[in-house]
Length: 285
Image (cartoon, rainbow, N blue to C red; front, side, top):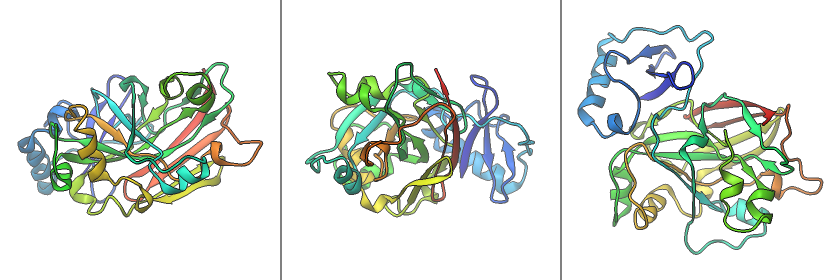
């Protein structure tokens, strides 16, 4: 299923995109697309049954904002330097273990919402990423099979980053990763049953119509199952939590001088095979 949330910021309603591309209202069945729903197999089965029976009312998508596909996110866990190509372009050694950092949940916005360039920013960068959405409480998982069984689905994430704040200002990466609007997510949460191999997905990103990133999740250093298993050794993952799994080569930081960092007025578009497409216009904060 392709689950999503539509409507004004803070007042989104749950919806579903059917096989014909028609938007369907889920409000009569569930309150929201969130961790509570994702952990409730019976509720998900009711949605599937209603879809199969053709009883879900259609929504007019004209002018309707698409919000993040998951509400009330507890935390956003991120994996850095997780593609061989990206590590090489930035001159970083291949990590022996996943590089883990956190983004605040309030960085998450809709897939087509405005991205704000922070004040005094000179190095705002793009990163298309596969996001894992957790569906069951995960702690101390032992096998890849267990890890994948805890995945509710997948989505497109844009891990926007300010490189000067991240790398040159001391301390951890947090300052360059947690600026407002720095994690567009969606448009859909595609349930795991519709993504048979998360290690065979193409990822692309364009800036002002120019292709910048063209990668595949097969280039991940630590694949999806290993990431979920590993992270569960250090923190409890709850239904509705998000894991951003790293970005392929092609970011601004990895390009020759003058590096083409983002500015107000730029337009970024990104997509992952089968998971949908995002488009953001950048403005000054």
